[in-house]
Amino acid sequence: MPVLDTAALLHWPIQRLVGGIVAHSQLDELKKLSTERALLVETIEMSWMTPPIGDAEAAAAKTGDLPRLSPVDLEVLANALSTGHTLYTDDYSLQNVCRSIGHPFEAVSNKRSNQQWQWELRCIGCRATSEANSNEDKECEICGSIMKIKRKRN
Image (tube, one colour):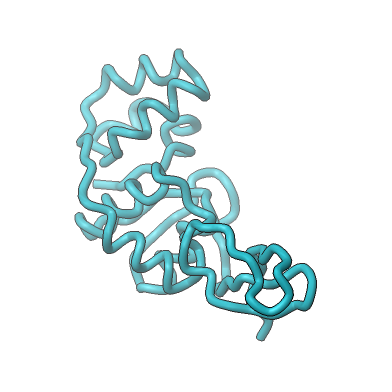
């Protein structure tokens, strides 16, 4: 059974969604994007799950992707991790987390990411860096400027 991100719910034919695993919060997200599609998705046989997101948050924090993931994304990732099934997503941050922990994933309609990225917080003033492992904005301890999430330099 595939674990489906909202991109799959929006773009795949209804027949292909049958039996997929989805998070309850995805329905609200889908209603905001396409009420008609949400009504169709509600009528088909799917596994609606919302497991605890602790493992998903921890995995995303290790790569620095946590600030880039929404609560819905974390629930979708938690579904994939708790079931062990392949995650179908176009979200590169979700793909990045899956790749880092060896969890299977596939793209929905976009090109699949092809490399592992790490993220860091980088000060816009003095360029100091720190780990990007939370959703909270951070102020630079050195100069007081805002720190923004950037791809870690090798």
